[in-house]
Length: 179
Image (cartoon, rainbow, N blue to C red; front, side):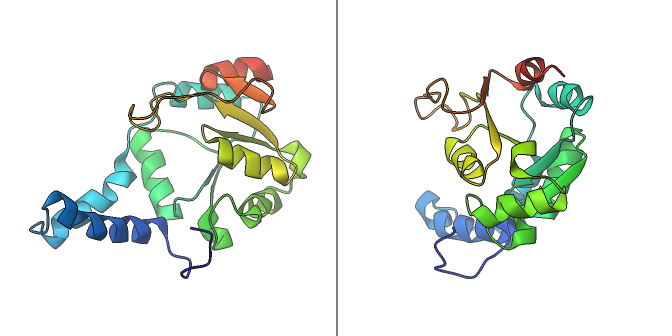
């Protein structure tokens, strides 16, 4: 997505294009436009990880907690409302008109929050996201999500010490941070 092969587009647009490409593979060309829209916007109604709400609240007691996602702002707002989550800020790669892992996305988030890189902790279940954040000087926390890929791939957590913190879930992260 960061190769420059096409103009930047909202993640909803990319989801729509992916769906259109996949429909013939699953013999679903007969889906109506409204049925296709419902599938695209299913990303706006994903349920949160079971530990998310309580863990975020623990973290918010001591820290500013913000999203930093490739999802467009409207997608993130819908997800957060659907899941009943609370954040101090909703930051999206949409603002930078790029996608993670481009350095500009992490720099944009730091600028918007008036933080130096070493003052920020990027928390994710994706090693490439954390490695890109570390490359701009951010601290990193890997939160294990073994079912992130739908159980189809064998989950291998990164080696200990690869990131500043490794946590089993958000509650464990909060405990390790003293929140």
